[in-house]
Length: 115
Image (cartoon, rainbow, N blue to C red; front, side, top):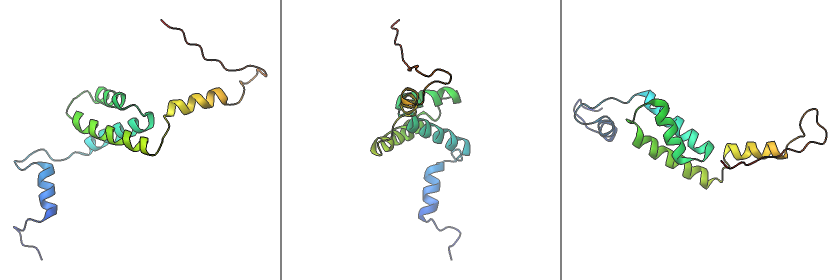
């Protein structure tokens, strides 16, 4: 059906992604790193922290642009769906949850001490 030299849109996209001049092929590890950054950013709703943490974990800046784009996209999607940060939900459960075990009348209190 297709001749050997036919250039269709799928081949063009693959060549654009991999580079016309024999660029590096795509690696699954890069996709996992970028997905990890998006998941962390969306669950914590901390855009810059997600980028810095994943860059620190990987130890290289090779994926910094792609991590930034995916983190920004994940943050915007979390904002659109009115997602709440994980740590705020955990704090609310801690403060308004059940009483402490063994103490019947104890209330939970958070102290802030400026340093």
